[in-house]
Image (cartoon, rainbow over the protein chains, first blue to last red):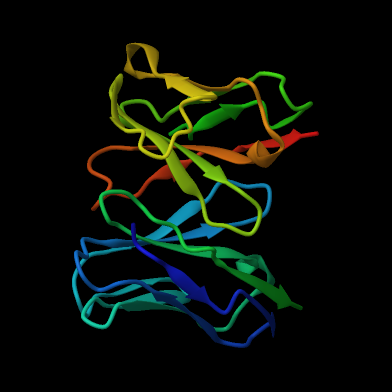
Length: 109
Length: 115
């Protein structure tokens, strides 16, 4: 089973700051990696499904990159807003999704 | 499009009692997943169904947990008897296609507290 690490565990930023998180995973037997956003009391929501080394995906102010050879993915949020406050989970795939423990982001107005 | 529905949203029981959770996936989604998310950890897959057949239940504690998906639609997850360490959020998700390349759609979860 994959060992997935996410850092930092938590992050507090001011509105307007840009921020990024890291997801690290073993680079062997890589198939794909999912990013999810989970707001308190809501359902986890898919952000990106990434499959190829060098993949870059963007949705509004959020973007992600993938490096399968070195085993990491970065998630960037440009100009953080209070509504971005959530836990961000990455999940590379072995034969199933293996979720990291997440990065909890709090954006203060 | 209606999302994944789960009930109840919250449940408090005493240890050794039984509990059941219900999930209704997105219409047409063949694959259904149950996850357990313990505080401070990422969600862990308990069981995956493809239609009404089990694809993966390797991490399901089968001495106390059971799950079924009748007619390939709704699913129930049961714990009998519950232990303190079963306190967690139980998430149901569904997808249309293989897990590798297709996003999963999650329900809001059931927060279980075992006293």
